[in-house]
Length: 192
Image 1 (cartoon, helix red, strand yellow):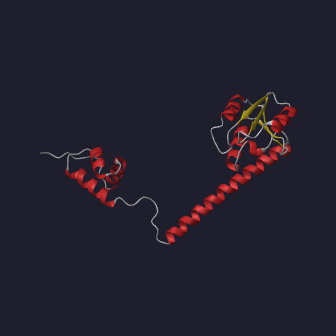
Image 2 (tube, rainbow, N blue to C red):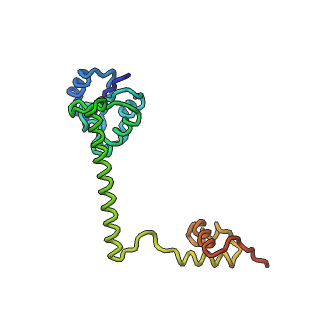
C-alpha cells in the first residue's frame, strides 16, 4: 500500500517548503508537486497521482485548499477516493478517512453537497414559478406554423421527410411525431 503526497502552489513565487516538510514527516512514499492554480481543472500532477492510486493506498495533502478551490471540486475528489477505496488525509485539517472520525467528516461533507443541490433545485423551481406567473413562456417557441407547413408538404408533394425537414427548419422526428399523432403512418406517393 502506497502513500502518495500531493502539494500545490498557486504562483511561481510561492514555495513548497512547509507542505513538503509536512508530507515527508507524515512518511509519504512519493510526492507530486503542482505549479497550477487550484481553479484550473488541468492539473497534470494531480492527474498523474490519481492514475497510480490503487485500492488501499493513501492520498495525503497538507491542507484542503491545496487540493480544491471549492466544495464541489473537493467533493468530487473525495467521492472518487471513497469509490476506489483510497484513504484520504489532510494533515493540517486533521482529516483521515481511514478513521471513524474521518469517515464521519466525509459523510457530513456529502450531506452538505446534497443540501446545496436541493437548495439550487428549489431556487430554480421558484424562479420558474415566478416567471410563469408573470406570463413568461418557457421552453422553445411553438412550431405550429412550421409543423402545419411540413404536414401539408408531406401530403401534397413528393419530397422525402428529410427534405421537408430541411425546408421547414424542423427535425424529421418532429414531423413523424405529428403525423403519427394525426393517424398518418405511411406516405401515399402522388401518382402523376
